[in-house]
Structure formats: structure tokens, C-alpha cells
Length: 370
Image (cartoon, rainbow, N blue to C red):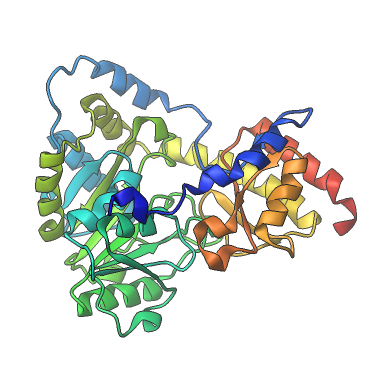
């Protein structure tokens, strides 16, 4: 069976009609559906990219020495990771590429199972299906106690809900995976943006006990550094997991462009631009959350990340339609699994002007709810 026949339809295609209605609004669309950055790439990243533009040779799949060192320094200083070596890191062509291909590159296939969050970024399931494996949704290890999966995905801060797990909860998944000989992959792409709870890495000694065996973290510069257009991410963890992946990626030509690697080095070494971006998103979050609260929306979890996970007391699709009439486009919760059907995901990744326009439209549409 061709791989495409195993996959669901691309979910964003189902938003075409709502997007058309939203674009017809006299004051234009406020697109809060996709978490794509709109703010400038920090100048230090642009400068590093320009300086490395004359890069005629093939880049290293494993990453340059400078990049590997920058990744180690970042994970140590920002996330408290210990015991990590250069053999345990590898740049990837955006974290989504690595997430989608991980089950295949781990050798999983028919008869294998991949545990994914019950409400989750669709690419976890897509990656499993691409490999011919079975995705199994679960929120807690006890829900899949009888399984022996080959791969376990965790994602905190969660996309879409923004939920954050404490060290004890993450540790329970680490222990579950180790007891079954499974790789635990932790998607931490939104980790820089904790609001009411501080994210913890699965690689943190408080979780992993200083032992990275069986663990791989996935990290991205798309959100922390507005670098989605560069396709810049990396994996880090157990060398026994990472190095075979590096070898396979060499065969497949999965290499990050050399100028992009140079930009990554500069941006991973600078936290000031991240703090500036945090302040931007915090202000947008506060404005949207206030408007939605006045309008009677319930915001659940959303402790971190770049989305508000909201319910209006009806199906998520009905809320999508109601907001489209106001010129707002959001993502229905059923994109992320059946458990999300009564919710919508509202992104903070719009300009200040569009966030303000969205907030005013919401407040005007539901003034009595407050």
C-alpha cells in the first residue's frame, strides 16, 4: 500500500471555506490558525546567515563542530542537561521533519505501536502511519500498561493545549518507556514560553536521573527565534539512539544548510532576543485571553506555549464558523484528536495590530457575556 493511502487527509484543507469567509471581512482576516511566526528574524541570526552565504560545499549531516558545541552549551545553560556529548546531538531540517521520520528511522513498522498524547500535534500519528506502525493515544502510562511500544512521544508544553507536566509526571513516562525498551521522544519545541507554569525537559537530571539512555529531545528555533522559514531544529539525547539516526540521515541527505547552521550557532548563544519575543507573546496572550474571557470562552490549561485552548460550550467546528464570521480564523480542536472536538486552538502568532483587531471583534460580538 502506498504510504499516502495510509494517511488521513491534510487537516488544514478542511478550513478552506472558513478561511474564505474570514478573508471577506471588511477589515481583513485575523489569522490565528497556524503557529507561524510573524515577527522579524533577530538581526544576529540574519547577520550570521549572510556571513556564511558563500558555502559551496555540502554541510555536515551531524552539524558543524561550532553548532554541536552551541547545542551542548544551550541545553546545559538553559535546561540544566548534564552528561550530554556531541555524539548525542544532531541538527534537523525543522523539528517536524524529525518527528515525522523518527518511527521509520527507528525501524518501526507493521505490528509495532507508537504511543502519542491523546490530544496531540497530528504529525506524531502521521509519522507512525508512514512507518506502517499503529499510533496509540494515551494521557498516562497506566492507560497503556499492557503495551510494549517501540516509541513513546511526550509533548510539553503541549501543542495544542499548552499544558505543562511536572517532573514527576515526565519521569513516569521515562520509566514506562525504559521498562519496555522503547525510545522516549520528548517534543519540547515550545519550552521557552512558560506562562503560569515552567516547563521541564525530559533530559533534566530531575527527570532522567542523570541518565540519558533511551531518551531523545526534539528542539526548534522556529518559535524561540522566529526561524520557521530557515527550517532549523535539533535532536539531543542518548548517543546510542542519535548516532544510528545520524548514519541513516547521511544516506537520505537530511542535512541542514550551512548558512542556517551558522545562524543557529549565533541564535542559540543569545537569550536576549528570546526574552524580547517572550514579552511580545505575553502581551498578545493577555489581550486575547481578556477578550475571550469577557465573551464567555473557557480557557483550559494553556499554561505555556503559543496557543489558547478554548471552548465556547459548543463544538469546536461551530466555534470556528462563528469566529470566521468575525473575520477570525482558528484551528478546530478535532485536528488534534477526537478528545479535542469541543475546543479551538487560537494562536498568538499574529501581529500586535491583528491581535488587537481580533480582540475588539470578539468583545463587540459577545458584549453581554462579560
